[in-house]
Amino acid sequence: VSTAIVIGFALAMSSTAFVLQTLAERGELTTRKGRSSFAILLFQDIAVIPLLALIPLLGGGDEVPAGAGAWLAAGEAIAVIAVIVFGGRYLLRPVFRLIAGSGIKEIFTAAALLVVIGTALGVASVGLSMSLGAFLAGMLLADSEYRHELEADIEPFKGLLLGLFFISVGMSVDLGLILSQPAAIAAMVLGMMLIKAAVLFAVARFSGQDNHSSLGVAATLSQGGEFAFVIFAVAIEGGIMESALASSLVIAVIISMALTPLAMTLEDLLRRSASSGKEDDFDEIEEREHRIIIAGFGRVGQMVARVLAARGIGFTALDISSEQIEVVRRFGNNKAYYGDASRLDLLDAAGAREAHIFVLAIDDIEASVRTAETVKKHFPQLKIFARARNRFHAYRLMDLGVAYIIRETLVSSLELAEHVLAAAGISAWDAKDTVTTFRAHDERTIQRQHAVYHDETQLIQTSREAARELQGIFESDRESQRGGDTRPFSPEDVR
Image (tube, rainbow, N blue to C red; front, side):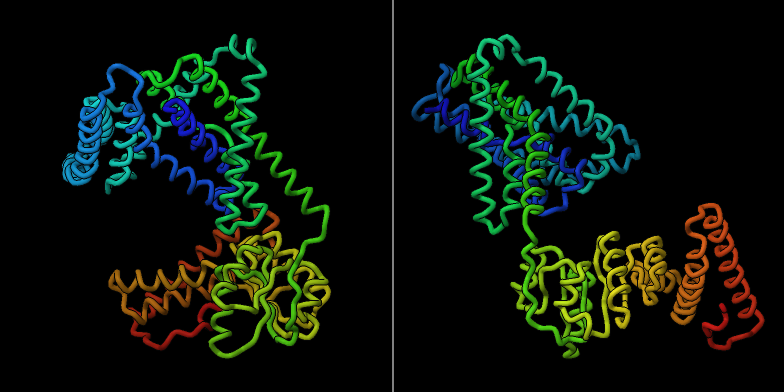
C-alpha cells in the first residue's frame, strides 16, 4: 500500500521545467491554458513539501520508528519545518538588509547558498529529505524583499544547474531495461499520460473551461515531473520501494517528458482541424439598432463601453474571445457578442449599415488592420475611432484612411509625465504647457513620418529632425519667458 501511495504521489506531478519553458517558447503563458497550467504546477510544487515529509513516515525500513516513536518523529519534522518557515521569514530580512548595506554583490550569492545548505541540513537532521530543505529555502528566499536581487545573482547558475540535473537524469536511464521490457515501459508511459490527461480534462471542464482549453491543459500536463525522481529516491532510501521498480518508473517519466512537445503539437492539430471542419458558432445578434459598434471588448473596449453606458448611449460590442464574452456577461453586460469583427456577415448582422460610429479597439494588430479594411471597403459611412498599439500600428491604420487614431500608451504616458514634472518643481501651468506642446509636436511628427515609414533611413532622419525641432521649440519658449513673454500657450505656437 505504501508503495502504491508513493507511486501515485510521484506520477501525479507534472514537469514545471519542461512545461513552463515550452509554453514560453510558444507564447502561451498568458493564455487561459497557460494560466491554468501554471496554477496547477504551482499547487503541485507547494504540495511537494508535505509529500516529502510524509514519505519517511509511510514505513518500510528499519530506521522508521513505529507506534509512539512515529508520532514523535512526525512532531519533530513538523516542528523543524515550522521553525524554518516562520523563523526564516523574520530572520532573513534583517540579515539580507545588512548584506545589502555592505554593497558587495557576491555576498548575496554566498548567503543564498548558506540558507539552502543550512535548511537542507536542518530537515535532514529529523530524517526528512534534503530536497525538501532546498525547496523550503527557495520559498523563503522568494519571500524576501531582495528576491529580485537574488534572482539576478543566481540567474547565471540556474540554467547550468538545471542542465546538470537533466544530464544526471539522462545518465540514470537504463537502456538495457528499455530493450528488455519495451512493452512494459510503453504501457507505463501510455497509461500514465492517458490517465492524467483524462483526469486533467475532467477537472478543467468542472472548473468551467471550454473543451479547447481543457484539452490544452490535459495535453500540457500529462507528463511526469522532475519531483518524481526525488520522491522515488527518498522512497528507495526509506525502504518503501524496490530500486528495480523505481528504475522502470523513472524511465517512463523521462519518456513522457520527451513526448510533451509532441502531445502539445497533436493538441494544436486536433483543435485546428475541429475548428476548420465547421463554421464558428458565433452569437446571434439580436439588437441592430445601435448607432455605435465596438470591435474588441478587452481593456480599451470595455472602458469605452462603460462611458457610453453611463451616458445612456446604446452600443453593440463584438469580440473574438468567447471566454471574454462569458466573463463580461457574468457582470450583466448583454450587449457584447461573440463574433469576428473582420467578417462582413457578422458586421452586417451587428447593424454596421445603419450605424454611424465604429470603435476599433481590437488588441491584435493584424486583426485590427483586417477589420479596418473591411469596414472602410464595405461601410464607408462609418466614422472609425481606432486604438493603436504603437506608432507602426497607427501608420498601417493611416494607410487605410483611418482619421481618428489614439495610441493606447500616449495619453497615460503624457499624464504621468505631467505629474512627474510637477513633482520635479515645475509649476502646474508650465507642466501642462510642456505636455501640450509635446503632444502637438508628436502629432505633427507622426503625420510626417507616415509618408516615409517604409524607408528606414528617412524614418530615422525625420525622427532626428523632429527631436531637434522639439528642442528648439522648448528653448524658444524659455527665451520668451526670460524676456517677459507671459502670454498663454496656444497650439498654434507649434504649427
